[in-house]
Length: 121
Image 1 (tube, rainbow, N blue to C red):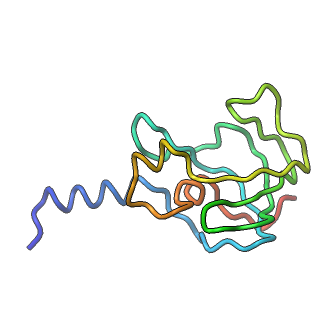
Image 2 (image 1 turned 90 degrees about the vertical axis):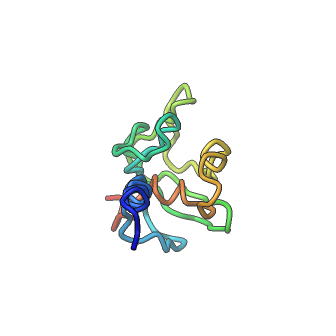
């Protein structure tokens, strides 16, 4: 029989990561940021703090995902201006995230941050 503390811990750990309809992404899929990771609480929070940009996946490796901005606006917190439409970038789990979550598989931060969408229209 499990102890109450163990079950509570397991439920809290599970709930820290947003549910994804599908994280088996393929080149050509479209994604939008739907969550953001908060390093202070070590949790994913709802909402896209950096904009409503819609991206298309152009390449996938075990450690990174290349995406191209197809529509809408996306302004990273560290940038002076929004990313231009058509611009591509490589995304990977941050060092701070990996340090705080050493047992999580590669790309778990990215796959919890973005959600697949049917299209960018």
